[in-house]
Image (tube, rainbow, N blue to C red; front, side, top):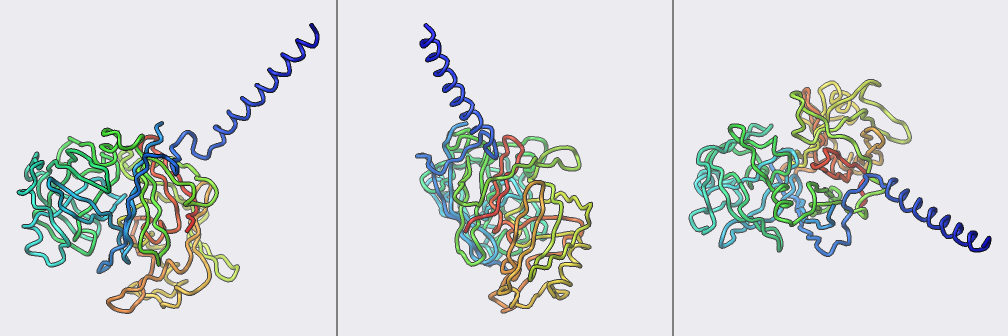
Length: 392
């Protein structure tokens, strides 16, 4: 009788220890019960490529490769029936997907492709004249909201609401290709209060991905492609673990953009560190893949320009690109290091090198010169951002 009780006790202890271990394994996951989906059989990987500009709880995921051609990041899509091929700038700073109509492109040589709605059997012009959007570089487009099918790789999003630009003023690559905005629906450019399910929400609704999230990996400055993964994150693309932080609300108390709290900005060269922000600095930083450089407040920029030798036009010595050292962006729980090589951007048309920072006035925008060094997991469903040092 005693030995039987001992055996039962031993088994219970072992089971208890095993259960404790399993619970601990879940609780110590850096971002909780999120979708790490590197081995999911339903993963779709789509390329994004870099484009030159004049300046400027399911495990299914959806993945795309971004193409990197010097300034902005493009994702290749097909719109309509039969499908028409287009390349759109992938933008985390806006929420609408829109394309050019032929009539808009006919008067602007910079237009890099258009969608002819008249030959698509699935086109429906749902809201004529209601689409209008503008950007920080003073670009703007106007036209209609419509629905049609959008294809990326072997996935089809049926009846996606998009904008059809018919007029506007275009500056550089971002608005010469059209845009795929992946932000919150509250940031859509709808006139009125009728938000619609944009691409991230339709991917979930149509059972292509399992949750309202995506992650972005841009690779380094000299790479031509990167990857976007809808519905999860890829732990092989970053060092350590993701540090999770809450997405900040805007001035109206609403969460509508990917704002996070940034605490410091410094630079290290030959083991000496210079800090450009005050000890009490706490800025609301926008994570924006549609912005080529990193915009900082004027007072911070002045210190950076002096340190790196940027002139009044934002031109730096191209040798900065071969200089050892890094800029450090501090957040709660994580610091992202950006090598100096990312802060000298060669403009192939002039042969000059543009500074990777920009005088943003009062704004703080973490653009591509930051994002190439950070792996970012955008969790719209939980209003969280995951950050880690990227792995090239």
